[in-house]
Image 1: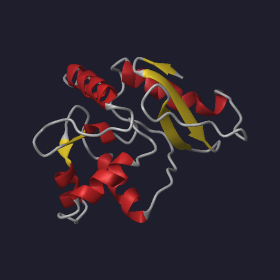
Image 2 (image 1 turned 180 degrees about the vertical axis):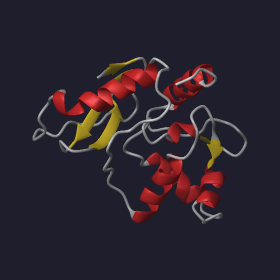
Image 3 (image 1 turned 90 degrees about the vertical axis):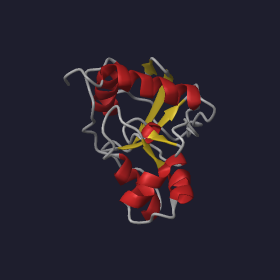
Image 4 (image 1 turned 45 degrees about the horizontal axis):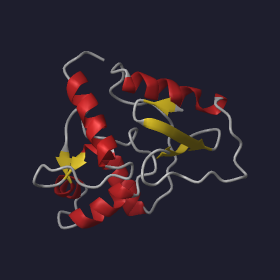
Length: 156
């Protein structure tokens, strides 16, 4: 799909979304030749992403099935609790999952998040308040945070 931050590739199994990749970022996802290209299975994610980019949606109700280790899954679940327009540090996520000394591991898990935006890893920043690391590139992270800041006070 086309978006204000560039082309986004959605990958799923017909029942749920497995991946969301920024195709214009530093790490575009190579399409598997076995994949069928079809918009129909992604109607709901595309609709919700368009609403998010227009400022009408602040949370998602999309069935997800990202692949990852149990630790990564735990981190990704914690990311989903970060409120729209807010940011937290890697250390805060580490504390939230009961592993206060695991901020580097949280950073690594955050970087492996296969469903960015929907699982809002862009809302995690460095302990100094600086924007650090993002699979889609820091300019995209900055744009997503800026979008949320500008829309945060508006009603959903």
